[in-house]
Amino acid sequence: MLFVIDVGNSNVVCGLFEGETVRSAVRMETGGISAYQSCFEELNAKFGAAGSSLGKVEAVCMASVVPEAGAVFAELSRRCLGREPVIVSSALRMNIRLGVEAPEKVGADRIANAAAALHYFGAPFIVVDFGTATTLDVVDKNGVFCGGIIAPGLRTASYALSARTALLPEIGIAQPQALIGRNTEEAMLSGIYYGQASMVDGLVERLGLALEGEPLIVATGGFAPVMADLCGCFDEIRPELTLQGLRVLAELNHAG
Image (cartoon, rainbow, N blue to C red; front, side, top):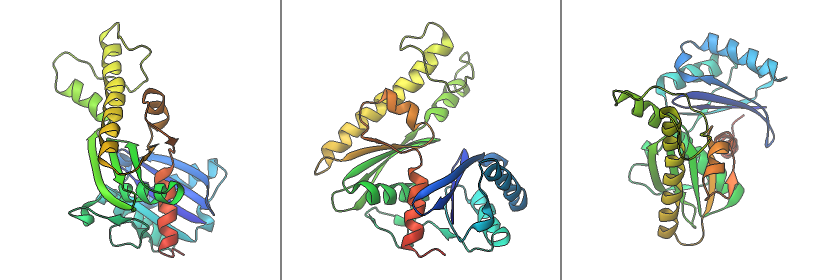
């Protein structure tokens, strides 16, 4: 069984694979991570509640954009599971080529997303990942990762509105009920969600004009199912694309 770990800025998503199938996936907040033993106990409890177990893990593959939290999970893999993790970076064997100025600085989650999209759909494509940041990553018809766009995500936009204004309140993230808000909170939600949708649709259109061929547009990330209803550009909705990319990269690097 393959254990994959996606350490993001807001959340850590972990999955257990049997073959190409995600048997179980669990989520925990990145901010609460401090010690590998407590993380292991929490994961054991979450996977146990989902009817799975870490007891049969044969290999581990991890992508991290938070170095401190990533180090905790690497230690968890070594000490609690007895496995040296495959850690995603530009140095790994992969099915894409990184055609950017500084390959070593490409986010591990972006590499995993591109690896999964190429494996399942072929090139060219654009992956839109709705997380703390909203990223748009471009792979051309030759399977080359050309780069992309990094923009504020939904939660980041919400925080910025309340933090940088005197009278706008802090609000939770909930899908707006109408385009025209009838109070301050509704107006903020409309601006955050429909603004994000319009931004993504517009950026995807611009990126498509810069590519040869018709790119497939793939949505992933925690907010992908919600944003897919508001955006008009998506061909595929794959919330677990990053986990699938970790599986692809683990196989390419003979994990386990």
